[in-house]
Image 1 (cartoon, rainbow, N blue to C red):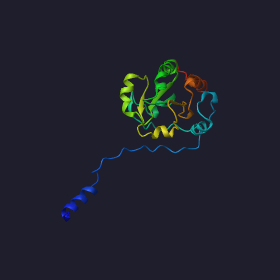
Image 2 (cartoon, rainbow, N blue to C red):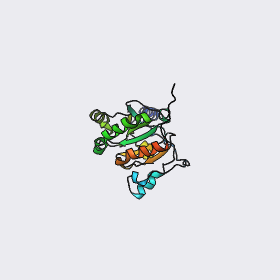
Image 3 (cartoon, rainbow, N blue to C red):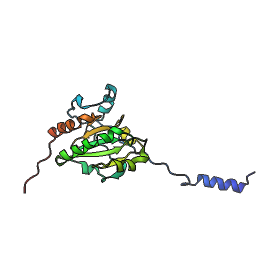
Image 4 (spheres, helix red, strand yellow):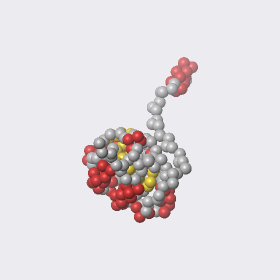
Length: 204
C-alpha cells in the first residue's frame, strides 16, 4: 500500500504547472469579414471543381491574413513589406513533384516582373513531410521567401485542397484569387498588373 506521504508527493507532482511538455500553439486565423468589392478574374485562370471554386472564391475580397508560419528561408517578409506589391502565394509540399518541376517558371516570373512590384511568398503547407523541409530546399533552392505551416492552420484558412495551390494578392493587400491554374500564373499576374500597374518613379 502507498503511504500518505507517497500519495501526497504524487499529487503535488501531478498538479504542478509546467510538469508536462507544452503542446504547440495552433494560430487562430482571423474570421472572414465583409469582402471588398473587386473585379473578378476570368474563370479560365482557375483550377478545381465547381464546389471547390465556390469555397475558394469566398476569400476573394478578403484582406490578406498575417503570415503565421515559421522557419523562414530567404528572409521573413511582414505585411508591411508586402504593401504596394502584387503577391503570389505559393503553397507547396515536400512530396509534391509538380511543385518543383514548375519552380523554374516561378523563378522566371519573378525575374520578369519583380521590378514591377511582383513578389512570391512560399508556404510548405502540408503536414505530411514537414521533417524533409530543409532537405528539400537544399535540393530545390527557391529564389523567394518561403516558410513552413506545420499546424496546417494557415493553409486551411486559405482553403488549400491540393498541391500546389496558388493565390494572388493585390497591391492593397486584398485577396484576388485562390486556386489559380499552374499554367495561368503569368496571365493572372498580367491581368492584375493591367489593373494595378507599378507606380511611376519620379525623376530627380
